[in-house]
Image (tube, rainbow, N blue to C red; front, side, top):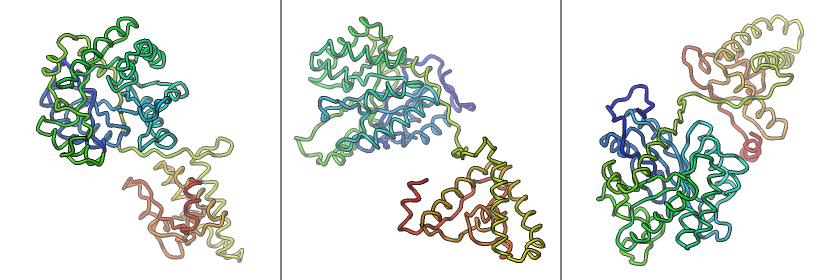
Length: 436
């Protein structure tokens, strides 16, 4: 069976006719209205054992979808419908579809999406550059050509078949054995003939280059009755009203959730394209570990462990604090045992819970702020009860003087992420954020 959930809640068929690999949910801000729970329920009702979410230029709904699908015993496939920059005409970008095969592919997709938003936006679109796949590789990602909206589809529409062949060959080189030519049948009325011409040309390219063809169905809404609501959504994003006869109409009434039987009937003449949708679902095996905290690795000198470095830094910092608190050497010596005992207790708890790196990171940027003229508050909240925080310079209040409890901040019997409340002067706050 395709599902990866350890506790499937449904009896799903072993040999599906088709798997949906395209869907714009409500997280596709400009053109989606599909609610994730409804989407997953439709798949469950159709006994579809796997399902993909491929929102436009984002992964906003990925975790919600992943949880919902796994909860129903359905294998979740994460991907993204992305804009591809057209260097010859920025106003005519193409679209391709990326699906995550593995965790490496998921991380790469996240990296490329961030890069697009940060460095290559045009008219509100975050566009990928083809050369990024050369620079960063394509490990863990499957590529679908984008059907008629892809660069190959646009070349076919312009009757530039030699370019279409070249593009297909280039993509296959970048995504060896992970590139699929994509076909769809959602057109209505006069557009059907253009759609069939495209499909015929794709089959010619596939035969010439020995490339697989996959059938997809771009879901934009759940039922046919939702079409008008979807049109209203697109009008809002494009600045039109429904009654405007001049408005662009980029979607059809056919783009609802069709069953396996519906799609199998549509592509009865292309059984291999149906089979490849199932094959792709089998190849996509991304597993996410949720609910686990991941902290950056703090660089330590001489490859010292985080735990050892935290202890040495805290002890050194405590020496300096005590010299200020108790200038008299005899009084300082009489007080030292109490502070040492508290420090040892706290460092043991911090290291046991795996938060040494967190303390070192926070201490690093707070001390950077202090050394660079950014005023920092003395401490607020339960974090002020930590002698380690005081020793590292995170806080400036002596916890023992005020009988503050460390356990309110960090307690091995109540495992949760520590959270320092830190106040920076607003005039220097952005500099600290840039440093972090």
